[in-house]
Length: 500
Image (cartoon, rainbow, N blue to C red; front, side):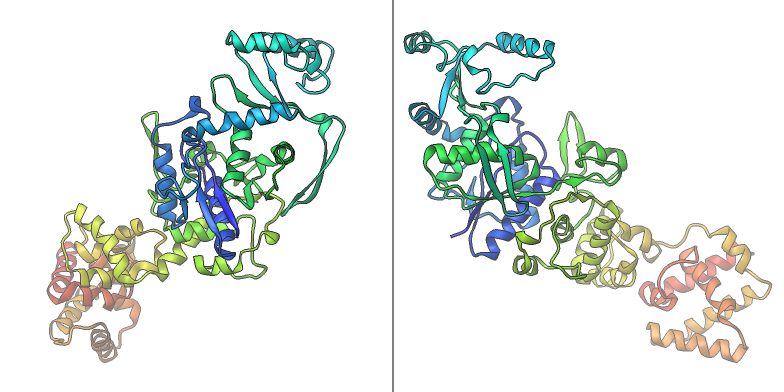
């Protein structure tokens, strides 16, 4: 059975790259009828940020990426926080020492710094591995007796992995194909510290094995760790999962990975939800008014496509179509305008009733109280011009309040000698029309224009100016129907009074 995990560290807000990693894991699991797990990798307590774990969970819930097992959904592999699994890891570190795949290292930070500087003085790069380990303070260079004495008196140590020398390690990545690396170029990574905490590498492998993870789908930045992780599986005698390393999400302009600073500089979110740090709130996609479906759709197509020109997909369609073999190797450039386009598309597909409920909150804050049926009508008339629900007020405020002023340039151009008389006559036509619907009103005014041999340019712009204050907005007669006879006549009178 396919089992995948999303395993973020609670060190701050969940970056949009992490969200895409979670999404691809979710899609892969659901495509194959498998399980999607959430594991919190909090072994680095120095970088732990209060509230970050709950933020991750809230973000996944907002996006609809429901996990099957994980924090708050305890399954047979609980607990799902690595800090709560701490007692597990020492026995596995000891296993590696006992079978010759790891060793104790007692080197102080000062000693390692000295070794580093000596190498630099020779024009070399210091690497703690086969080439240097025998000259350093570890259980490979020290006698068994001295190692035992150091351990008994409580000397600080780390447990390092003993990287094989001169092996051409062949690795297969589901996205990148076969990759070969010379193990002689790799360092002996730290797996465990004397404070009882494992490093990411040991905890990650042990937990993936114990949680029966079949596929590790993660960001490209973890590709350099793949060799160590495969060798750890070999060292334990375990079957390794399949690996897939996703391409980076790149900056909109320039080179490199998309960062929080790019979002701040260029004015777009890079987090799923709002996040506060150092007293400053950084807006997320949710806080900026994006729909979760739009963000999901946008992220799915960053580095993957189904091989068609189609762009709008429901989550169910994405699950059906998703295939890791169609994920690109090259990085995918983040396009802030494209995510806006997706949000516009999803806004158009939303039922007017749902959008009206969202808009009502804004109206209430502005002190506007109107029937929900009216709000639904308004939303239906203006939503095609909107990208966000927050755009609705500017697009529709004339439905709820009469114009306080008129566009001077438009008024100067449209207000002719005969205009006051035309506005008065149109006012009478509207006043005498009993069926106050858009279709009937339009027909009545058209008949008036034909009788008076008037063109649209003589009647409609002044009428729109009276209703809106500007030459913008939806169909004039739709506006009239919504605001009603009394308010329409009042606005026509107001314009006439203003132009006397």
